[in-house]
Each structure stands twice: as structure tokens, then as C-alpha cells.
Length: 406
Image (cartoon, rainbow, N blue to C red; front, top):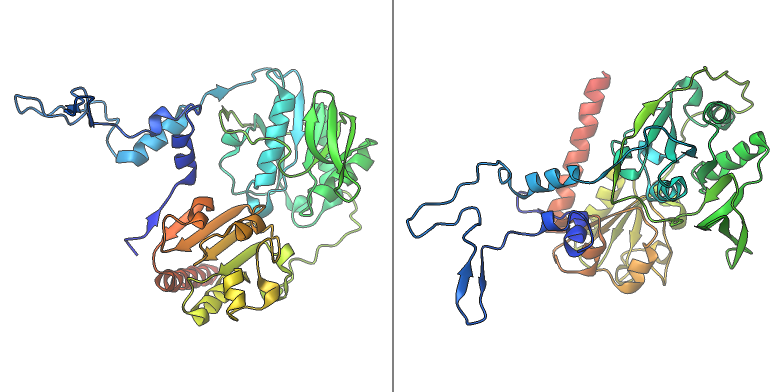
């Protein structure tokens, strides 16, 4: 497995974007080039250049130690720091945090909050329970409020509304922003609107000045209305923050949140068969294409991962998967949080069908195929060897978890 090539799509995008502040740091150092008269010219000031006296130039700054990964890590720190020492007002954001991490929808929401905050306001992110996110600073969070405790764990919308009302009393935010999603933000936002006596603007996809535009008429029409205090925004409502890093200073509530008498009892998660989940609702899809030669191993890997199986049109036409498992414009449009494409080259119809997926992982032999270009993480190699190693890694992880629990 040592010959597997892993790519960093974000670093490649920065290297192509000349307007990005880190563009220069991502460019390889050019040691020689062809001059206009056909003579090879050399950069005499470059590190490692051997002069006519045979002496090699040495870099004593330490910047080149560690290779490209060191350069990338140093470049990340160079993002300009956005600070708001004394905020004039707050823009409160309640991300879904599905799986304990910020989703692409959450990052779009934080981009909209940063747009509304301007230079005088601060973006306040309110997170419930424990999380695994460590990139709040680069996502645009100026202040971070974490409401922990057993009362906020699981499905507890009434208790969460109590916590948000306490935040509203203390910080008095100018706007409340929640994702209009089916993973909790849509319901929580409407409950909060009823508790605060606000009329929310729903399915908002654009904010212009003092006006917000939302979808209406089964998504076929746009409805413009004055900018509301409570906004339930759709995905891609704004560009996510990528050019600045923020302080993400932790803040706390000055008063404790009273525990409400909940009329809802959370009985915990219910195990379901991944194969019974409709493709349009699946959050983790393991999809195979023409490059899969061992379908028994493919099914075994999907079962080990607990993923819903999908397929490309070629695999369905060849009879390896059922028609209702087809992903793409001619099949099912999916919105999975994680989409793994095994042996799929990436036809335009297939790429259209996975356009709303959060993270795409591609396993393929061809490093130049369109699926590799679309993927957030790419693994170049034989699919059978990679799937076998993946099954072994999952089993080792589960065995270690059982030993720790015992």
C-alpha cells in the first residue's frame, strides 16, 4: 500500500488561483529554464545551486526542511487574521454539526454570517454537546459558545431552544442564522422563531442589502422579503470563508440554562439495514463502477463500512447492481455526507448526480479521470487491494474498540 498516491485538492486549487494569498507559497521553485536564445539559464540565487567554485548554497533559514508539507503548513499560518476586539453586534449561527463536524452547508452559513457581520460585528457560533471540529477559526467563527451537558444530548429540541433563548438574552444578536435542513436545523429554527415571536425567512439562498431571497412555489419561484432577524438558509447561500482566519474565542453564558420538562423522550439511535435506506436519503454511499472486478469483495466492503450501495450506469447496465441503485442525472441525485466512488471514471451525468455530496472519495487506477478531479480525497491503485486493506483496517479498529470497552 506504500505506492498509493494521495492528493490535496485544496492545495492544487490554491496553486491554480493566482488571486489567492497563498498562491505564491504553493508554486514550485524553478531552478532552470530555457532562455530566448536557446541557452539553459539557472537560478543562481536558488537553494542548492552549485556555483563555479563547486560550493553548494545552503539554506540556513530552515524553511526548506521537511519538504512541501512543511511549506504548506507554514503557508496556512500566513492567512490574514480577522479580529473583532469589541464587537458592535453579534450574528449568531447554530450549525447542524452532523457527526460533530462542520458540513459544507454549515460553512456556507458561516460565510453568510461573515457577510452580514462586516467589519464591526462578530460571528457567534453556538454548538451543542461535544464536537470533533478543530477548524472553527478558518471557517469564520469569531466567538464560540459550546452548550454541554446531558440535557442537550440526543434529540432534545425543547431544551436546545431554552439554551438559545438564554443566548438571545445575553448577547442580543442582530440576526439568527440556522441551516434550513432536514438534519435538525430546519426544525430547531422554526421552534426558536415561535419562542422568540419572530417571523423567520425560510429557504433563503441569497441576501442583498436589506433584502433576502428565498425559494417558494415548490422551489420554482423566488420570494423577496425584508431582511429578517431569524434566517433559515439553504445550501450555497453564500461563499464559505477561505481567505481569512478568525479568533474563535470561547465564550460562556453568564447564567445557567434551566432544564425544561421535555415532552419528548429520546430512545436512542435505531440500527437499520443500509440497503433499505433510499439512495436520496443515504448519508454514506459506497458506489461501484466499471473498474470493479470483484463484486463480492465490493459487497463485503460496503457491509463492513455500513454504507448504502450505489453504482454507475455502466455497472447497472451490465447487471451487477439493481436499477434503483444507479447514481447520476439518469438515476438518483444523492446528497450524501460521504460518497465513495470505486472504479468510476466520472461521466458528466454521474458528476451531476453527486454534485450536492459533502465529501467525495475516489478509488481509481487512472489519476487523470474526471472523478479524481472532483474528489476531495483520491486513492490511486488497484481497487481490490485497497478494499482488502480497508476491510482489515475496519476490523482492526473495531477489535481495538472492543478491547478498550472490556
